[in-house]
Amino acid sequence: MAACVLGIDMGTTSVKAVLVEEMVRGPAVVASCTKDTQAKVDSPDAGPQGNEQDVHKIIAALNSCLADLPGQALERVCRVGISGQMHGVVFWKTGRGCKWTNCGSGPKFEPDEVSPLVTWQDGRCSCPFLASLPRPRSHLNVTTGHGCATIYWYLKNSPDFLKPYDAAGTIQDYVVAMLCGRERARMTVQNAASWGYFNTTSKSWNTGILQESGFPVRLLPEVVQPGDLAGGTSRVWHRIPKGTEVGAALGDFQCSVYSGMSENTDAVLNIGTSAQLTVLMPSGFQPGESPDPRSPVAYYPYFDDSYLVVAASLNGGNVMATFVNMLVKWMAELGVQVSESDLYPQMIRAALAQTEPGLAICPTIFGERHLPERLASVTGIAASGLSLGHVTRALCRGVVQNLHSMLPSERLREAGAKRILASGSGLCRNKVMRQEVEMAFPFPVVYGEEVDAAVGAALAMLRRK
Image 1: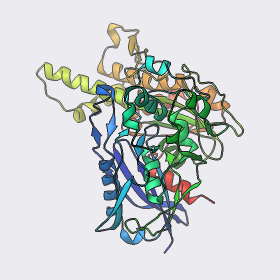
Image 2: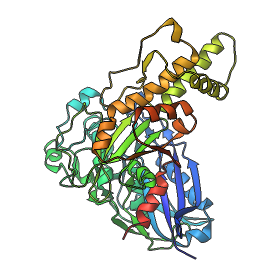
Image 3: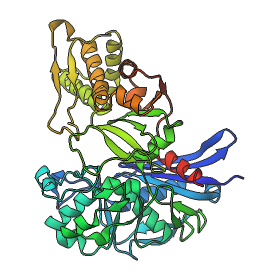
Image 4: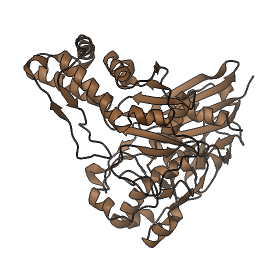
């Protein structure tokens, strides 16, 4: 039987593992497993703004996924590709980062001297604190939740916390290091850029700037290109053979795009909890070396020295969910009990009957990274346009137009986009949102399968030369 590739995504709330085989008609997923991590823990040092996860629970979910995949297929794995939640940081003691034990499906590793994972959602770095940090030599901003910003926070607020550790990385970097028996992580440009203080043009950390400010540069991983190997598995893992090639860990966003983008001229739109729109920049594009905190887009390193221009909105399906929840609570206060699952389809039906909402809603109830102070607003309110259908239509239009304002059609066209590949729960469940997308963007819109970071990680390794 043909060899297969294992793809893993270490997500924010779950871990997913897929087995991908090269078939006559192209790559196909032959097995898949997803496990919730339920790993969130309190952050006593950071208070309510902190967001940390228990690495033991995350790795338990990973081992559970592997145990549930077909054993005979795992024995045929020739390569492993791993992606995961970007920006976050976990610390470990070299040589003691994990311990190996045996289980029913074979050997597995478990965390040993490892810190909690401080995730990308962490909010401990306030605006004044960030303003006190040295200016990076990079085109990307440093914000709260970024690995280097978190390390600076520990350095200034809890320096004893860092003393036991001499290695750090994202959660996916940690997994790769443990699988390969590496003491320190080999981090791809994708994850390094997500930490801050990394120059993607020179592909190097801002070491001089960091050292001058007392930053513990000993923690910074070695950086390699996306698609490079981190090594081979140091032991049999579940039933995956010893010596199996393992790629250096990738970013989940890039892998999600890679799983869905079939042509370089495809723009990829995803509206799930939040919303993202991206397109590949022309060959040879290079970003500058100074961040623009007010820019609505960012340039993420992709594969083969290319960049994605990305509009990453904090307001997507979560806006609709908040609206539905608000209506349910209002009705409960009026003595009427209705479930969100019953109310949502009625809202969509009402909105389909209204082609022009009249009122205009700026839906940014969660702010935006480039405009954190800009919250939601409603204008153009008239007595004739206050039906549930009018408001629902206006809210859907607002979500789409907000994303369009961040990355307009003109910018997509300049980058060479010829069509939009659209996916996400916020679109598949909402015909009104799909209509608004098709009205806002003058491109053919193709609705396909969900973007999938685990599949993208597997494909990146499958196509590695």
